[in-house]
Image 1 (cartoon, one colour):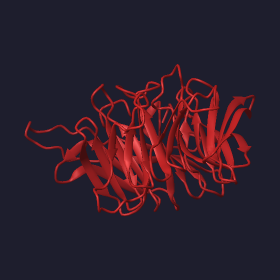
Image 2 (cartoon, one colour):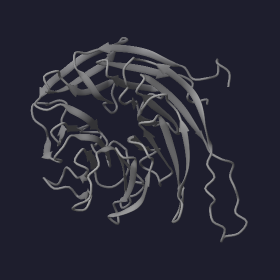
Image 3 (cartoon, rainbow, N blue to C red):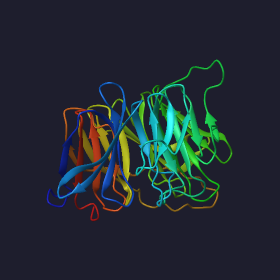
Length: 357
């Protein structure tokens, strides 16, 4: 692919702020994004910005008792667009962004900081009940239905006496009907665990030998297809979830992608085979997974060998001297993303030519 044919990453807007930003999310079906973070005095910041004439214009802001670490719209209806947040005090809350005085729902979900959150069943993401998964420093992973007060619908945590590892990443997937749903979690010791919520059982586990900073299924609302995990040592691990073997697990592909920690992985909503990784060195890299040639079985008894495809590096850009903590693609405009960095700023970027790669 020549330089002219490759996608280009263009910084459209760069907005400096006066607090540390941990997460940013596009508000569904709008030109607005919400910014979550921590003020220097340890209080939480929620700000809403609108993209207007090449600028991010502040519309609403509020300050709360505890710093916010993460957020998702995944379990909210498109009509309500309620934001679910996890904070440093271990509290899960959902917010009506037009009335931010008090949360719509609030529960003390964990004994430690909520590091990661994901949701499905809302805004066209997955089927079935609207549910939120949270992962915490206390070592537990919990699934919540905001229609039920106080208690999680599922809790995955170590047995009494076992070591509790810091959970850094969670993801929901396989929500292709009203019964099926998987939760995947990643931990500071490199453990990756996949839970089947339908059967309330551990489906699969592996250890990547390094802290797991980010996880994502390539699509939430389809039969499990691919899972990508990213680690402290700058590698991504791609698992083909169609190739499960009781003895060997899933077929996988491992590549060194960044010279520093990879903080997150996010798949393009319009094309599940394109994904972005964000680095501790302030870079954003865009990749494309290429499936292997289709292999026909000689007979019905032949097992799947689990041959993996390859990954093409489409483009990368250095945005900051500080880590890019996460990234959120826009569901309506292909190639548009917003990302925060620890230099106390937010950037809106455009990736061109993604529809032709």
